[in-house]
Length: 180
Length: 158
Image 1 (cartoon, rainbow over the protein chains, first blue to last red):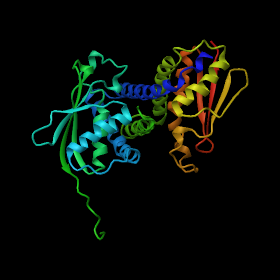
Image 2 (image 1 turned 60 degrees about the vertical axis):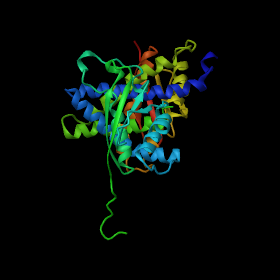
Image 3 (image 1 turned 135 degrees about the vertical axis):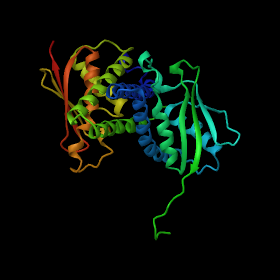
Image 4 (image 1 turned 135 degrees about the horizontal axis):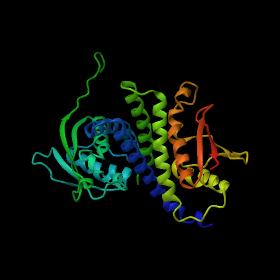
């Protein structure tokens, strides 16, 4: 029964391939549905946002991390815990702005693009834009407004994938009138 | 590694996103089901190819169906199909009593009418997988009580 052999280790990998392939099918479908790449990027970001606002609960429940005291700590948690937990990679954190409100996540390999090649007519498609939405959505749920965008992408010929994150402001809780 | 929560969230958002887009613009419900099914088909094709690359050759159709019910289902949905039935004339019914993609929904009758949206992708997944193993089929799904569901596979003879 060679079919049964070595399935335990395989299945973890298969699970990540399921996600990668599903994401690929989604992007393909969106490219068919929308005429220009900008609209696809926007749609991916929006879907990512919706995933992010839910993902954060799952993350907090599983990871047991507490409150972050500054943006540097947030960066660490994102790179070392969140990315590791969900995508199995640990991006490095670099290029801090002097004010400490902006940094880059460098992804040496991006699991989302494992089987992907961009055709020539989609030069402005940001394939992994879902990630930006996820990060933005998740952080918004912990009172942080951030701006997230891709500045380098291996799909476009860059040597690494770089996501730039900028802290905008703390979102204050507005308690409804009459509540304490 | 890519936690399965991520797949569940992505799948939910895919369904929601497609329907949101259809509501705002053109297109009706039927189109969304077709799109989801097609996406599943592509994923199924890709997955089965990766999955069977080191396995022994299948004996027959039933052997392939068993593989789908056990190994394939376990990888994707973390459990096996609970019951496989066939009339030995090309119709197979795969029953899952706790289908993963319906588990997060209320088990009552309230959302029963929305269930087909969440099954279309999986129908495509089965059809795509079978197609790459050389079997042409039509796959439909039905739910009578959540979260149990049945997938009916009708083999198309070439």
